[in-house]
Length: 244
Image (cartoon, rainbow, N blue to C red; front, side):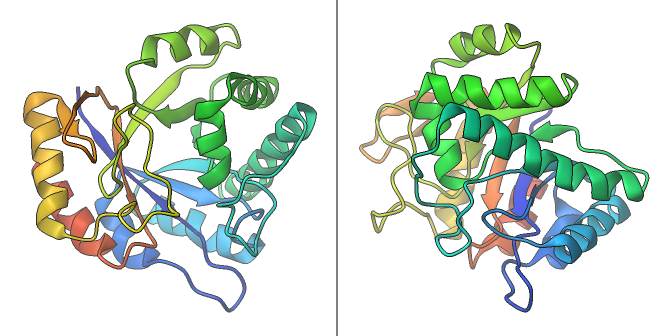
């Protein structure tokens, strides 16, 4: 199985800039583009779509909670109906821009707190699946690779949706396979050599280590590097070489 490289992108807003999209896009296979709720705006989304097309990068919708101030990294007490609605709304916004440029979205990856909540709460997972399914069953949903991949896949099949499983190159994991909370100082890995060692171990042996040195056996379709990480460009370049 070829492991693809994905990155969260298009996360600027107005005159506020986030990430290094122009430099990173040539090295990734999949671009998770913000849809206006946690970041981005119509012009930023348009520029990101055009950039992805230029480099023949697969486009994914990156919907989050409606929280520009918190960058979508704070959980919100939304009803399941609201979650379904905001996912459809954001997919539709990005899909409209894609259509105007004769391209399309091929998958959905929830952002930040919505992503974490999806992995913790089966009902939220189902609400997101329901939203995607009602919009376009051809879209895949990207989730955190774990020991429960088969369980999640069985649930998704009930909605006619296929899944992408991902691993994070620059995030530490808890022993249960969940991500270390960003409220902890060691949540994000900034050391280039540590990141490369982790990905080499995953590629060659099928596992990486948790924060407490427990082996986590994972089978990802894709590896994520966060575009807002200061070392993102170097990480992406080196991981690209490794995966090739």
